[in-house]
Length: 400
Ligand code: GLN
Image 1 (spheres, rainbow, N blue to C red):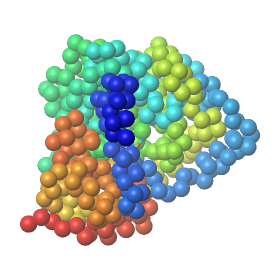
Image 2 (cartoon, rainbow, N blue to C red):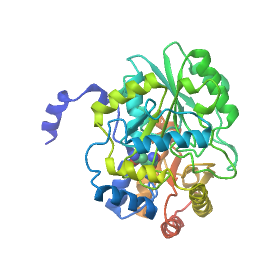
Image 3 (cartoon, helix red, strand yellow):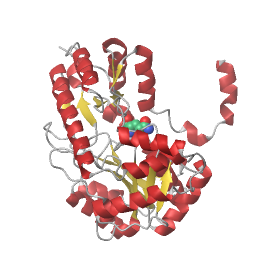
């Protein structure tokens, strides 16, 4: 078997050899293998809203079962444009600027494939959501990382150095990826930070690709500012979002990219040849979802605030140092108290012996050593799940 695999190696693309499998998805498989509580992959273990499920069932019943328009069902694109206008004051032409994709994951890779040439550079804040690394490689771009530094105190904010960010803008920089609210840190970029990024994008003629999938999941009075709403950015921002996190339907695979018309045109072409289109009936359900009242979003955020405040004290009690997230539904932690050689050894022990799956911090960094004492937990789970995890984590022993 091993010999056969070795002989087949030369069939493979060099691109693929430059990245490994997703650690986040691998941890979900490990959780299943060991019967562990899955606080690794960020998907809810509670039901999606009944009205959205009903809309999907009705669409299938009404025979919306063939391809939607390649760049997205008209009803959904209209709803996306209306939401950008009402939520962020950004005027979007649904006929020319919106591309509905198979999840924001496809929206991101389609965007990068549509804009990058070999040798182009893409700036990524680190720690980063692991897909951005392989996304850059697949689109032949070179990632250039800028550090987000953890707060000294657990309630402080992750910050970046202005000089370091400026230095990352180079001759071949094509775009900067900004994920706010941020996975894995929970950082919500402030207006001042976004304006600084905006000024650099304008000065160096660079695009901003903003992953805003957690835009409604905010705590402690933080506000989400959409990059495209900043003066000067509408013409150079690609806004990525989707249904997964806001409507608790990560398996539906409905996401989108909003871009200036000329760029949207290129994204649509890539998307067409990659996947043709996102699931048609689920796009119809998406149009209903995006028409839910404001109260839906307030309830969503409050539900996650409660879950955060349930898990974080339990983690602290167990010996983790937590970096309190201001948005999204993950908490990054420091594991030095347990005396493990690295995050991989720790998460292996956690999933197999303690019965809780988490994501090793190194999978969010280019140099694994940077994340060697960090682990990410997802808290998009039912109270019972979080309580059971807390009980199991209580068995951890601190070193020395
Ligand atoms: N965003 C989720 C996470 O970070 C996972 C998304 C995915 O696996 N496609 O856990």
